[in-house]
Length: 582
Image (cartoon, rainbow, N blue to C red; front, side, top):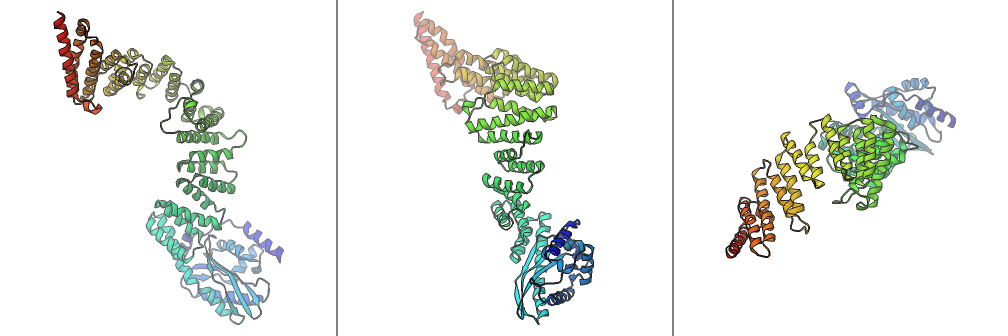
């Protein structure tokens, strides 16, 4: 008997080729007619009193046949189908019954076991099973006398009405979700689970619905309930990983995803998809670690490319706010390690794929080198990549930045000039070149480029702001003990050569006048005729400029009337010294 049962399971499993009916299919079946119900003969677990169980099954089929919505598959039809697989009725257990159901177009399968206890028969493990094989609807066990065959059948059939209602609610649970009516789906999923809390299919849909309603904590709780009874439910593990990550529980998310991959251990595509889900949920480092686990030997270029990109993002996420990039000493060691991991993975992917690799990924290598202060390696890698891709504008852009880090300003400017030859419309070319010169203290080289930028459509206000920022930091900021007032004043004068808006014009006038005022104050010491004659024109020039910029002064905490009174006093003093000296 044991050998025959093993054969039965193998035979049925080998023939499961047709798609299993879903709840929707059962509903469609109901619309076309009555749902077919597979009721196999019932056999005692100890093999006793075989005919008794067959009679109960016949009674159960007769009762179901009286329903308007369901009809049993005739016993002879079941036996005919079993002969196709060289099986007999007694070979069927609950598993093989469920496997057989879709082969004979049954929407529901019935499972039940009983044991002989003297004159009594005790039923247990009674279930109605949806043909998709996941939704099980248990029925409480019971005991009857051996003469109560019809009552036994009635007890089993009595749960059928409840089953029909549950299936209806379950169907609505899924249907409303498909229509994206999440509130209706939530209501029906909860109602279906109230009738059958063991229904993992409905519970999974409930979790998905809760996720759509941004109730992720509740969604995760429901998915974890599924995993508790089915530890390797693929869909539940996958969703749990996503939800845990979204809820900022990266360790739990990684655990769920790792268990999911135990079910799908050899699929790079699955691993990449899960890593992408983790990345999208905000756990770039977890995505990176997941891919690392799947890389064997050299690793595929696709996995390496993804791993490097996630490592880059993980490094960015781990960098403390306000940290200046450009040197390993300014970054935490763990951030440097992530950038180095990104460089290693992306470089290996580039070696394998060459110019078939997305240029954005190659740019990331240059950027990663620059972030950790290895500008020489950034330049070398960029030059190697340019040899493969040609003068790719985006690569030349990061190449220019790396050259600037090495203080190779003219080379950096020339790299941007190469972009102009390929794409004259590339944004901010002249402005960037000018900024390179300004940052290097070569303002005179920057000015012609800035005027060219404005001629090509750049915002003149931006040019003025660039010049002012340089002039202020180096010449006008009173907190800078090494400031050069002449440099600051000249920078503001250069900014005013552009057609600035009224607000920026007032700002430039104020700082122009304020710079002259500061220079006059410094020049008038030690109050000699010579210093008075030198400083008086500075104060005279400063006053109308401060008047023009009076609306701006309060924005930097300066009282314009007070500063202008100071200028007038200095003018009176210088005039008095000059008169006395004459």
